Amino acid sequence: MTDPALPASNNFAGGKLIYIVIPRELHQNFAHHGDFTFDPAVPLPVELPPGTDTFDPAELSIEMILSGLLQDLAAQPEEEKSGYYRQLVNGLRPDTAGALLDAATVKARAGDYETALEIFRLLDGLCPGNPVLLLNRALALEARAEGLENTAGENGPMKAESAFAEAESAYEKALVRGIPDTLFNAGFFYQKRGDYTRAAECLLSYLDAVENNETAPGTEDSETGVENSDTEDSEKRAAARELLDEIRNNGLDDPAFKEGIALIRRGEEEQGILKAREFLERCPNAGRGWFILGWGLRRLCRWQDGAACFEKALELGTANADTRNELAICRMENGELDEARGELEKALYLDPDNVKIISNMGILAMKEGDDDRAAAFFRTVLALEPEDPVAQAFFGT
Image 1 (tube, rainbow, N blue to C red):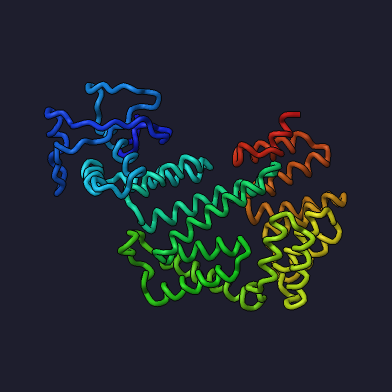
Image 2 (cartoon, one colour; image 1 turned 120 degrees about the vertical axis):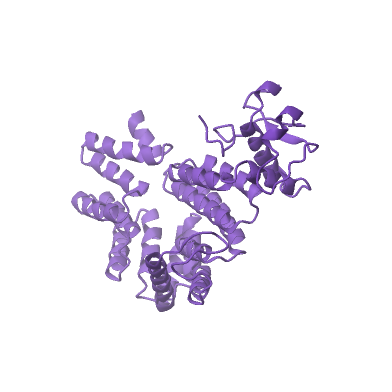
């Protein structure tokens, strides 16, 4: 049985739409819903079940009409009739938006990003410009991009960059509304992308917003309806200040740093390494600068040089999961398997669901001749990323 607040088609694919005038004998099903006034003369969209081309009036249900209304609103959100259709959806099922958002969140957490994004498309038609929905769509796109980045297929990097560009566009659209949660999440999105100048702009705006009580901690935000926890608010402020201090103290808004990341990401490692070295001449104690240099060297299979850079990054405080994972790769390729295992275990402790780290644990187990242990790691990888080519290749052999 489907949730009556959701579209009739469980896969959210959207069946064929037809427009009908509601039969007189069904008018009473629509007439009394709060302040909403039903107009029987306005044709309503009905979504037929997928693969069905004919309509049987005897099978008409509220769910089919709700699905049709949502599909119409998603396709034509600015039509003159759209205001009436939105009122009808909210009159028939006042919890529709909340139920759809919950469904999208569940799908995104399960890694079913395409379904989640389709639900967000429906929500955008029902609640155009809603800041919470805009933020959640951006978060889903970011998670999808990170999943693509974590796979090792030949076209993985290109697909990931395209997905990150889509996520960035979604964040920029959400930032127009400028609610604190969007500013906070966008700041860390841009930090992960190496655009520390934009990250700082977002985080400064976030701190300005919360510290001027635009969204007072422990109260409910009138625009988003989200209650803010004192503890969560304090932790987010501290994280924002910590990153801003790191940016200021290490010169991470230096153009050479940003350019180095972009060049290496595009596969222009030699040029990226030059930019990283240029940055480090000005900021020799920036751990992230040593990480970027090591990343470029590792991609050129300069294992020993890369390892030295990652060790320096760790020494300077950049002891995150990515640094330890990259160092582990260099150690593994140098035949230092025990050292590689130690780094991977530390990385996995910091980021237990990171597919790249789990996959590298599987590769290490293969190098050690422990196929059973490798298989266990690769099964975990496939549970998180079913299309991961490295894990698929292991079980295909």
